[in-house]
Image (cartoon, rainbow, N blue to C red; front, side, top):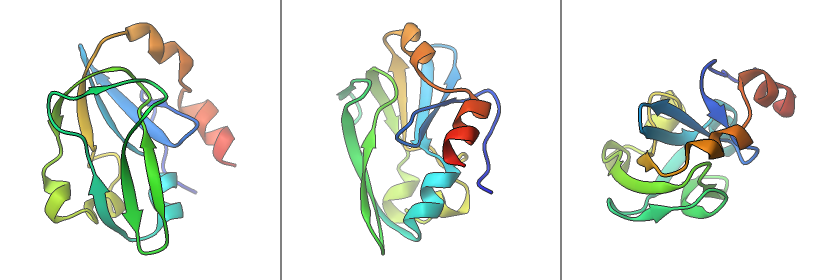
Length: 125
């Protein structure tokens, strides 16, 4: 069974957001990386770009498939995980440690539209 972490927010499209203060770390879930297989490339936005909840912000490519990244939250991208440019396979090693973008959240109420760990786990079964 894929790892699911309590205290994070999950989207139906298999992205998570870890909230710390006004910031959210967005990545794909362990379930998603397992479905994709070996990740070979991550397409990320630029720092300073705006992302919108429910909108595409990049893509993850594996040897099997490519999958759009859908932002679970809205805000400004304040950092991208540069390590993924050279080592996209870090997502396969630990999808939760290797977030993709850090966002300054513009609307905390959007978090209410996301699932908690139990609801996400149930949606994957």
